[in-house]
Length: 122
Image (cartoon, rainbow, N blue to C red; front, side, top):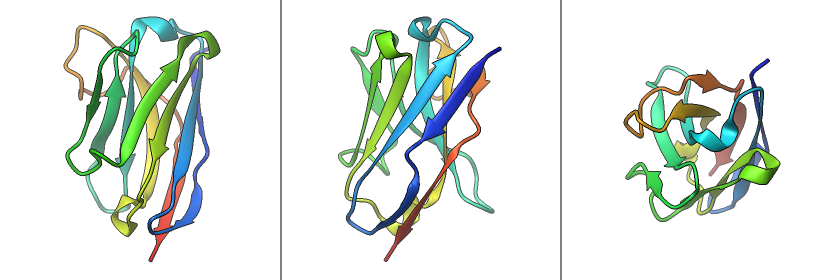
């Protein structure tokens, strides 16, 4: 069974940091681009970051560039999203997913997790 489980979300003050983890199983994690999206209530789903299979390339939305860092550990079947200098507008549910490498980087992943909530207070 395919599973992606996000963890590490919580409540943090503006300017603080959180590290999200995405533990994957049931598919070839190392063969898929790892992607992070977020969605706040009443807002559109937004691409956040992605990392290629080997981790040699990363991609970021302009809104998080310079503040967020995506990484992966294929041996641990885990992807990460380090979030620094958090802002209230970063408040959202954060979701990780896996997508085939031949698709565009920000396309909807084939596999999704249930998400973890990040709330940034001012």
